[in-house]
Image (cartoon, rainbow, N blue to C red; front, side):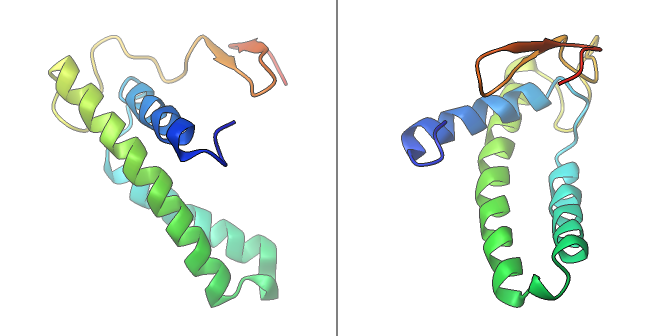
Length: 111
């Protein structure tokens, strides 16, 4: 949903970044996740992990994370919290998550 339509994708990524403000995420985590993604791809793809593949994933992750960080910063500013600090009463996970098929999974429930 939205992968072929940036007008839908950008707001979805902004909202996702905003939600991360309540998960205890710090802005530095996005860089660490990007590095972990590249290492995982390198490990899984082996010789198919070329410089071209690394560059493509770096570009995609950079696009996604920059928009999410913008949403995260917006949420942190709105909540009056300092960037990277966990807001009071924040939990690590949402109680429920909506799937791409439109169903909802609640905490403790498996896919």
